Image 1: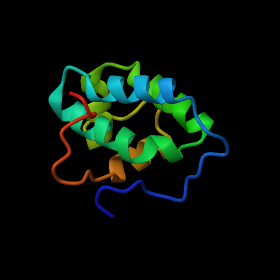
Image 2 (image 1 turned 45 degrees about the vertical axis):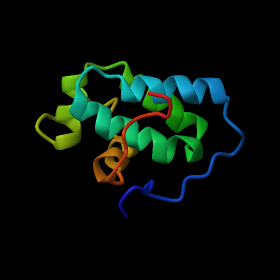
Image 3 (image 1 turned 90 degrees about the vertical axis):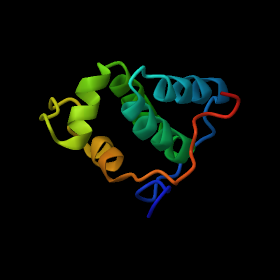
Image 4 (image 1 turned 135 degrees about the vertical axis):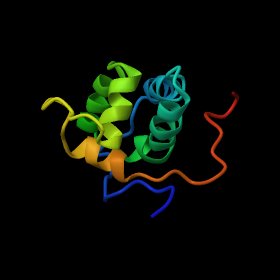
Length: 106
């Protein structure tokens, strides 16, 4: 479904708001607009409901070069085994809602 997170993921405990905001900022400010739109939209829609483990995996993914992540998402290059997981599949399946412009306040 457009603009929604794929799968029934419910956080077991409240996440640190400052941490989530920092991750959202990093997802939207990649320096590569196409990656911003995919990763930022995914973070906005899914981050709050992700498990601690998935949030940590998303943070590790954000540490990778923008063009590599983008190629993995589009399937133009194989993702390394450390990133070729269920989280990457969810990002690939994600379709952002129309009209998303980035984090509030930008």
